[in-house]
Image (cartoon, rainbow, N blue to C red; front, side, top):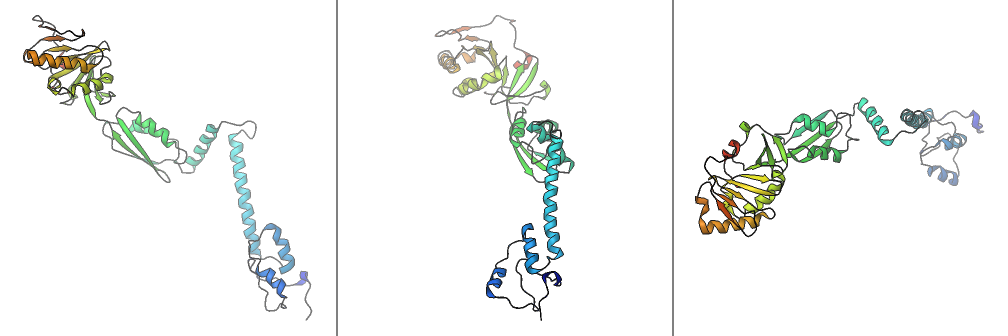
Length: 327
């Protein structure tokens, strides 16, 4: 039987990855069969015309698959062009990168990819709204939130020691806090505040709400200078046990107000040197057993001990009533 011309041959169902001739076709030579069996790659636009010429018309399903890919690429390019046009004024000017990022944020949030849930743990004194404000996540997404910058802002809050931020896709953020512990009470004029071991002011508290058992500081700059005084007193626990209030004077030195009403004026400079002289005086005179004395160590290599006249100005009530505890 004579073969029909290519344009008159009926349509056939074929596998574009591995073409196999139908039974009605005449056997082909080995070289052509080998070439067809090795042609298993994906069909491209350029190959369609060649396949049609050799194997007959391409099935409609293959044409639709290639067309879908082409349409997807076109749609992606068109969407990118629209986004670029919207953020650059349709090409009239180029906006800054952070502005483009904000536009992308707004687009993602409008599509439902914003941060919809924030969980906080580990905080007792820090207010929730302060943490939310520091995070700055109300108009951000998990993809665009600067986690490191947000962590630093949260850790700048007075009570927060450390903060850990965990992103849970697609729309949740977990914040784990570790808070500082108060180590002293600072009498700042008429106000009282809690400070931590590094001298950081945690919060101002009413005098009636102050915790018991914390040492008391007073004077300008006392919280910052307190760590040095605390370390020096740790070497002399016998003196530290009698300190009721440590008052910073002139930002240069300390006055120690003791539980027996005595007062010690330490010299400016190294606190440990003054305390060493004070301990030697105690060993020689047992002055701690005498109430109301004033020991002046402000002059190097000199110690002056005096007893104040009656009706002298008494310490402030808040300092006088403070419980004794070593710094």
